[in-house]
Image (tube, rainbow, N blue to C red):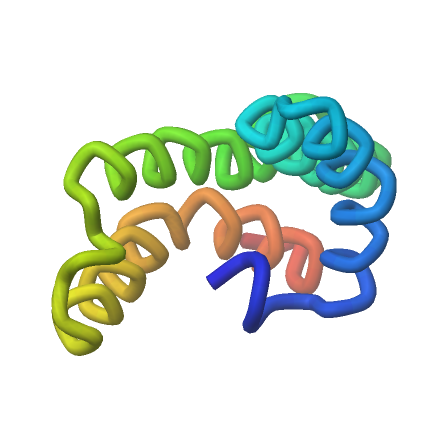
Length: 113
């Protein structure tokens, strides 16, 4: 999901600046962690300025929890599942994590929430 279908501009930047330098050194897994950590930090900063620490940590958690999902995906060997089952997995984990992203975004748009 993240490497193919999401924000391609930011994904390209994260790939070039976080993932690729570590992957070239044989540390691809660390590159993935660095990419999600950088994304969490970027989103944390954008939200902390507008909403404060609590909601910025919630937003950052959305990106950090993706690492847990990726580890589970590897453990469960989702890449060997049928396409329908793998898509269901992706949809399920994204829906499970979505409140961590959506709640701060709603508060950015409507501070009266």
